[in-house]
Length: 325
Image (cartoon, rainbow, N blue to C red):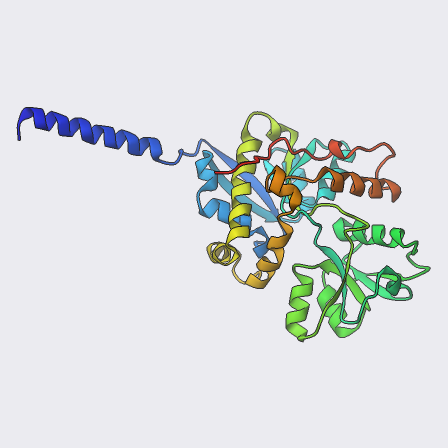
């Protein structure tokens, strides 16, 4: 081989190596810490997938997930030990209303999955009159949703029906007949109760009375500076998009993380909640302003928020990407 041929080959190889380097994923420039509720669970599949498929790495991020209850994770967010937390919109609302510097920036579920369910027929809200309805406790999105539902039908707790605090035993309580109905999740409790009993599970749609979005990403004010929030939201949106498009593959990718804490049936029941007519126009993960406005108005009516509270004080769509690669 002549010197000229060797030189040409060297230049060609060098150009190829340079192109390869340019095409390689970004090296992580920082670590981002995200708190996920409870324990590793199938409901967090979009976040596990975003990590497994390198969506965070593509944003120059190395992600660490920390599991725990939201009331444990939110203080860590405010202390700067976590950058983001996945929780109910009400977690952000009430924390901010008490002076915490937090904001809800991306939603997983466009429709709140909270429902009233029973093994006996439910013919509208009025059918709850005289009944005992089990709730986890006087807190969280399930409690605020049932309160709004009762208010919409002029039903009064104690006078017209009983709300029984039963912890997170809704399925067992309904199955055993300890309560007539319970408040739980359409993509979890309803699926598992139907599977375990082989019976039809009846539900009441709460969204008309309380049209709030579901669980999503909450950030501290510190995490909203610079481009960190946009990078985290973009990676998370890609995880949501992949999970909706192929739940079976997403489940397989994420299962090593959550083990037996969830089924493919639950994930398949969850994915329809992720998209809506609003997200088709405004991007997956976007919060519907109309839903937020109506839900905040319901919380004001319940006396949980001051008169004049504005939905935009608690959430933003500023970091949502309308077009994803």
